[in-house]
Length: 387
Image 1 (cartoon, rainbow, N blue to C red):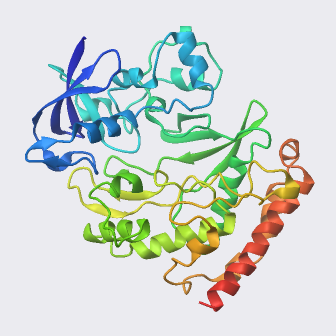
Image 2: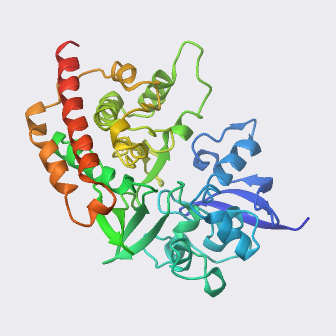
Image 3: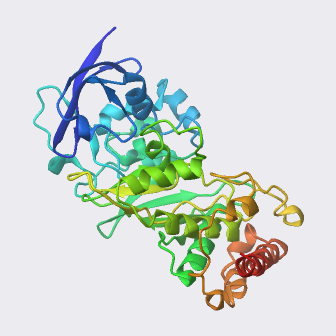
């Protein structure tokens, strides 16, 4: 079986020699370790030996998921088995961390190829959005290859800045609207978050957000944080995550989680899984900087339910199965200035009342969404007073 040799790099730091199987693009062998401390968070090393299964899991998850909207049809047309096979085309680069793979005997450097400072191909993004057939693609050197999530999305460079453009899903295409509504609420409460704006393409709603990761920072998901070591039997997931963050210098992690849990309660977020929140780290010094700002809140407000049963399914993640149970994890509500939420229902209703929006969010659905947020605010205030 044919293989190709690479050096796993962390920005300008060589981490380890790896050998990839050409047919699967999985790690066949790990060679010399140059800088064990720069291995991806959660990949363990014991007696000088890297856990290849954990490194392979990290590498596998780096590729665009096979559940991405229409990706299987695209791969079939291209006669490609898996999205991992595109990883070498972009040297494994993404826009949320500083890892990449350097081919053997290559003179490539981080400064020459990173997507923060260098242009990237738009071909894959155009294919994902149905703007061009795969046969016309000239390059797959793009952060679209390494972007997580199942919804249709792509990276674009607008006025020199990197923006992620993300769609909703039928029948209501509500996720982009929800991202903007969540931004409204968090802005009022002074919560650290990524602001989303609504954009229209092909007569459909999309949301856009600027990349919040810089060349001097990288996102480490809560999932990988929690893999640093096994969870003690006397700890639940919340306690385990908090303990690991505090050990690495994030003394205010509980307040950051308070803000996330409160936000998710207000919008009934159904999908705050361990891969869409986390921490920011300096890729050069490995210092943990802070909790990451809140992002990816679209799967909320009954996004896939009929208006009459908008909040019929109250799925909750990541720490508890219900939002009210998860709310009990909040250490303090003193930071919430409820008067700043006054009038948010009207703001939401007006935002959803635009003519183009009515094709997706009718007046009945608009009223149900605004009323729900208003009711949730009242319940939260009552809960805070009784805590």
